[in-house]
Amino acid sequence: MSDVIKLLPDSVANQIAAGEVIQRPASVIKELVENAIDAEATKIDIVLIDAGRTLIQVVDNGKGMSETDARLSFERHATSKIRKADDLFALHTMGFRGEALASIAAISQVELRTRLRGAAMGTKLEINACQCEQQVADYCPEGCNFMIKNLFFNVPARRKFLKSNQVELSNILREFERLALVNYTTEFTLTHNGSLMYQLMGGDSFKQRIAALFSHSIDKQLIPIETETSMVRLYGFISRPENARKRGALQYLFVNGRHMRHLFFHKAIMQCYEQLIPADEQPNYFLHFSVDAETIDVNIHPTKNEIKFENELAIRQILFAAVKEALGKFSAVPSIDFDNDDAPEIPAGEVATAELRMPEIEVDPNYNPFASSSRRPATSSSSSTTYHTAPRMVDASLNNWQSLYDNFERKRSETIEQVVTTAPREISADTNPIFITEEKDFSVSSFIQIKNRYIGVPSESGLMLIDQNKAHIRVLFERLMEAKQAHQIESQRVLFPEVITLSAPQNLILEDLKDEMENMGFELSFLGDNSWSVCSTPAILRGINAKELLLDVVDTATEGANDIASRITEHVALSSAKAAAIGYGRKLKQEEIEALVADLFRCKEPNFTPDGYKTMVIISGDELQKMFS
Image (cartoon, rainbow, N blue to C red; front, side, top):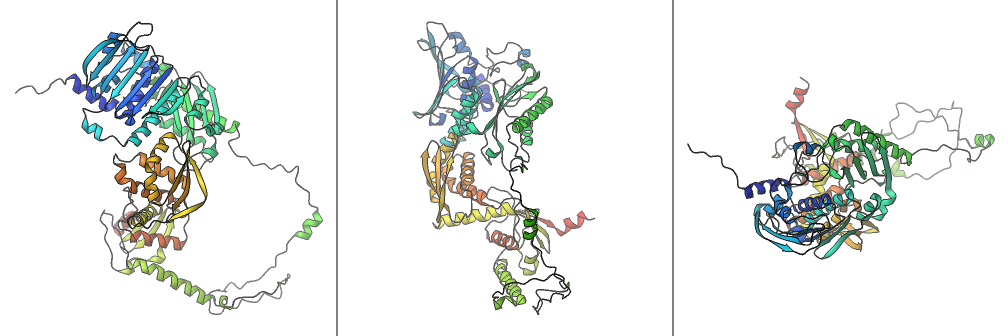
């Protein structure tokens, strides 16, 4: 039997590694900028064409490379950052694996111009899919100039799965924000298709860099944090509770100059805001941790965003105490003032004169206001307190309580019956609905709301539980789609147009969505400086929060598929429905419950929301019986 195990060529191995390290254009920028920071660059320029598909250029004024180092840097596991395994546990640089440049060269066409600091001449290197095509002497500025052309040109499957230019550019901007925040003393410029998007001057303070990236108004929302122990130095800013956001919160954690995601620390910060902000809102925070490099491990994931701490629990307690202290120190926690020094004094006599004495009335315990006789029982003559009221006109129709009650019940039942007779009666636990033809199986009068979240609907086959929020999303989504198909979406003018300021990534997405959103009944006006005015909303979505809806639409589109143009209507309709749907915790009136259930069963697909979540579940009679056996 012949041998079957073969050693993969370097080009194939590099493409495999590129799948982990280089996921999208934003990954290329992250790796190149971190290399520039390691090379002590104080100025970094980033130039993009077509959101990085056609060109990513990163120019820095760092130390540069010699002719030999430039050639060797594109080999796998070639690095100047570490020399032995022990160096992995005392890292002071961003990179250390020696995989980034080899991975980039494997899936693109690379041109590098670099000159070592103090050298007379530099070198120019051209690489095409791991193959070095030429290397010649070149006169160029000190530092490095990387040009990454036609990303994924030789991996069509990877290139096909890239999102739209707007989405990819949005991801690039988010990565740029992280890099600019952690390196706030470095000068950055970012240009896309010839348009300057960011120009951040070096030497700024951390607070100035935050304001330059997001908005100058955020400056007044920040509370500083500064604490230092033998274990960790913690500094940065958190936002005031009143400035919390329902979505798109700016939350950044850095350790030793590196961005990280850390759920344990995030939960500690959120715990400090309990009772200060609603459960569905998130605070902004920008926090730097400085610890001994030997006490953390960054060699966990190729992206180097996941980090383990040796003293994680202790640092979490320090973080919790620092945030709590900052919130209290800057009066972020609301207090109640009971100071009565300036309160006017009221004489006791006037208080006695102003006191109201309510009459004591004896009422027959057997009295029924809905009985056929509507006479009110007379007040007992033995009552020690009497009072006189001015005569008033009483509508004669109000005297017959029983007829009013019967008429209300009749109209209410007729309204529901119009829906129930045409609605599917039950949905089984399976994915396929089973329609019941007997009306007695669907008892309208038995609808109940459970924990202000679910609606219970009993039937002969068991108990149906409906999620009120998801059910309303399905209802509103189908209404919007039907109105769009019939070209019958009506707009409703907003009395006071709401001005919304977006981040740069969100602004790019909204520019792409503007035309389709106007077709869906919105009217948007661009005010400049990433600000928009919402002048009209779809009349179907009454009582919506225009700001929250717009942000939800943008965030949904950011995670959308590559072919956003063909699915934009569904994106807008679904996001609008989510923003306008009944929320959890809202107590519904009985008629609202009945109307929601009726509207849900009118839908073409009542079982699931448009994004695949269940709107209802069935607990069968057998399952109920087992619970009590």
